[in-house]
Length: 366
Image (cartoon, rainbow, N blue to C red):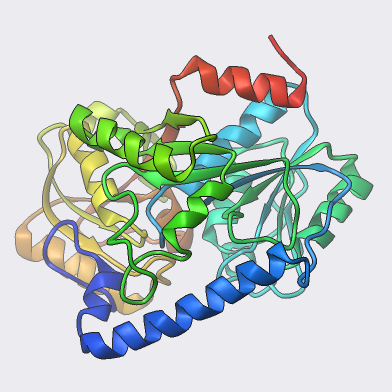
């Protein structure tokens, strides 16, 4: 199984790059950094165009590779806008989908119209998670925004993973920074995990420190001070990943979260931050005997399923647990000799100041 590791909290990308000699990584990082800085310069000088869509744009993004929770944050904010009576749509690039280049409507807000193979598993999860909100995939998000306005008279679009998508102007840029590993190792890809130089934090209108359930008070204070120096005008709020549901796969039957307390399990996921999944399982008392972290957006094959079944059989463990995103790609798989459970999470932003800011922004104050 590609990406298979036996220790909990494995880092697929990190392990991959650790096999490459450091001088090669340093050289590649310099080349990558030159390209990123050149691109940013050209946008600032308006050599590269940034267009204004006929809708309001709320962007959710990050500076590092994976693991900050962009998609569940996009779901939370799209749901907030919908519940305020705002005509809303979600725009995603649709990583790995066959319709990314041409673009496609994955959901019209009433029905799911595509598959994860066409649009990617994250947009499909959004389509199921936020009913009443259309979800579109495609590289050209300006074109997607135009379509939303013409088809549904959309007022606001939410960009999932939009911080680097400078082709589209936005009305609110929300930057997610994981509290437990905020800026990676302060080095650009591939030597580090930064997609852009640290100083680009200053572009953010609002900063959300994510995964605060994994952060202590000392780390929280130091992180806020560091980010405050980089982006002195951006308000900083905290968000938390919370376990909210457990279902059996493939039946979809509900299972109490308390069921996993003290249960020995094999956990597996294809996430940017598998450690986050392990932490959430620990919060509800599950005993992870083995964590199998896979590459982000991993595509499951028959041999992957066989490895997981064999692992449970060898360890004499009758339960596997994975994420909702992964479960979408497992379709009707029913493991032999083990029960597969799916853990769902949601984002909580308890600070009233954040929601008051959002109310003012959309002009729908309570």
